[in-house]
Length: 504
Image (spheres, rainbow, N blue to C red):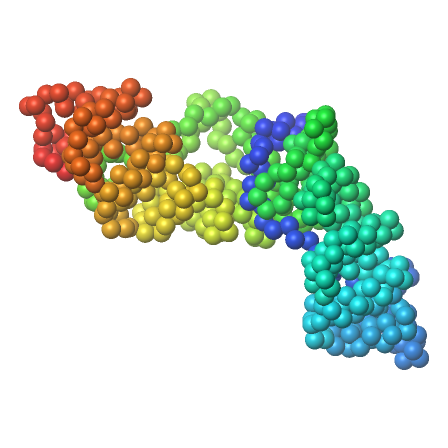
């Protein structure tokens, strides 16, 4: 990405808050899987170890050789993978005081790999290794103490061990400290301290910390975890915002395959593509209140058109790549973005079926913002893909989450009896909620129901008032029908179908 592109993304990033980190998936980051640093470190810099020599030394009870062989057997890259044999080798070395083996054995017992799962014994081995200065064991023991697994929960002790590991250069420990300070789990919430610890972990290469720092620098607030940004700035430190550096940290995190960073970068890049082109006009569809018969073709979902002199908005290929990678790892925000790309034809081809697939993935994971577009595609999309029953379900969930537009569309399904049993009382209730959210169309429909006595007791005065209010707000049919209400000769014209005489 060139410098101009980075700066454009950074400018857009500032404007994206707080929706950028909405619904990002779980941040649980137990790094206890780090039973060793790397093959190179274990083998003294030799990535092609002399297996026969290591086996011979292990048979002669050399703890370091037993540990090294255990690692090779655990990984299965150089010799055949055998978890039970790895556990036996680690135990033999651990009994002779080898800290790395003690940590490795603790990990296998914590996870139940090659041995019976036993977190209590795992904690004991972690503690023995931690006392010997093994930083991975210190980090792993701290996590068990933090979670109350294998030991009684003790956040003070957890903090002590995290700090010990961090002081010796461990990459994950300062990230965990950042989480403790950010959430206030270990005492008073301290956002400044949290960001400081995240920076340390980020500099050491921790992908989650890089994501945290990147999001914080972009917005002045860090992406806190499962659903929203948490402000990590001191109230006097507004100048801490640095979008260019924030993008750079996100790039580093994404390069390590962090799906949260991939998702956030995809959102930023996608918005920058849109921003870099001319403004678009948006045509928003409204349900046609004058068509109430069940055979009527439902209105189409929102469509987007570019201005005459602009080119169609297409996402950078990298946007699709990043969003797809994060979506496949279960990040709801990325799944929703991918759904929008396919719905609006921003990918190579418009694909409503793929849009439904990804919206459904996000909505199923609790992403509220995916529920409404999913419902609208199932309700109003291509006929072969329509499922008004499922649409009603997602409209209902979106309504319960406070999305008033969902009430308008759900009210129409109740009124028309599509996908659910016809119930004009429910339709009226949902229209009322939509009106509270500012829907003029719902106000017009309420006026019609009052006038016809459908779902509510007939009340011509309230009908007239509602028609007048809708007309004042620009509804195209409200003024026309209000005039007709005042002309007795035209009183039988159907407000839902002006070509049909008689009540609907």
